[in-house]
Length: 78
Ligand SMILES: [Zn+2]
Image (cartoon, protein in one colour):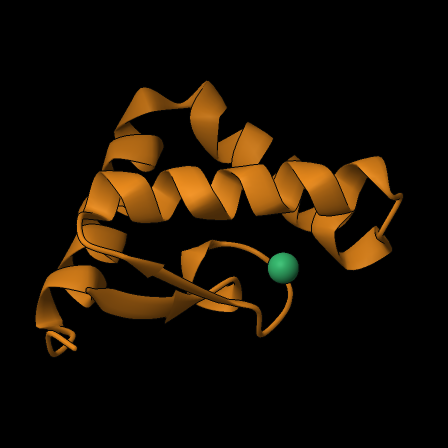
């Protein structure tokens, strides 16, 4: 298992996620962002907007994923 924070995954807070794979990690952070956005949490709403902009350009989105995957891969196994 590895640990990453909401901020490290394009979010807005220090909430920690623990997951065995990068895919699970991104799913957890996405669910958390959506939950916070539903509660009208401004920093997370802004983070969601930024992600939406990123997703408009598949190349940028791909680069973002590669970058975050590299961060995940570099983390020590817990
Ligand atoms: Zn968060």
